[in-house]
Image (spheres, rainbow, N blue to C red):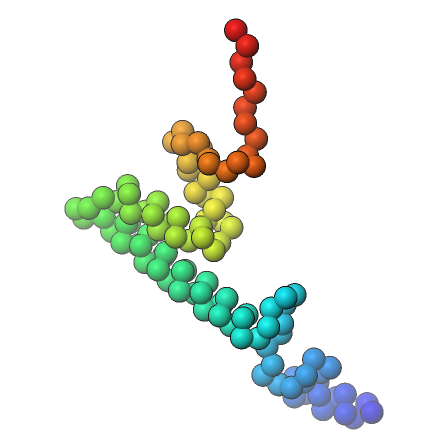
Length: 110
């Protein structure tokens, strides 16, 4: 028994199954998890590319002030840090967040 456990540990098998099996998260099958990671990768590549192009437009002719936030918005579809960044930038420039769950400021009485 102990020898079998040591062999499994050396081969990376353990009690989780065969070597090469992907861990499954709650509610995710192996194929769905792979598709989710592939989608995140594509969004990351496209979003970072748009941000880099926007940064290049800072010194080259082009609408950098539009392209950089567009790239961050693309990243915000999948990444929480980009959503927070986009929300903070919107708040800083005075745009109201359209999230209906966001708390609204109290009405002022005259």
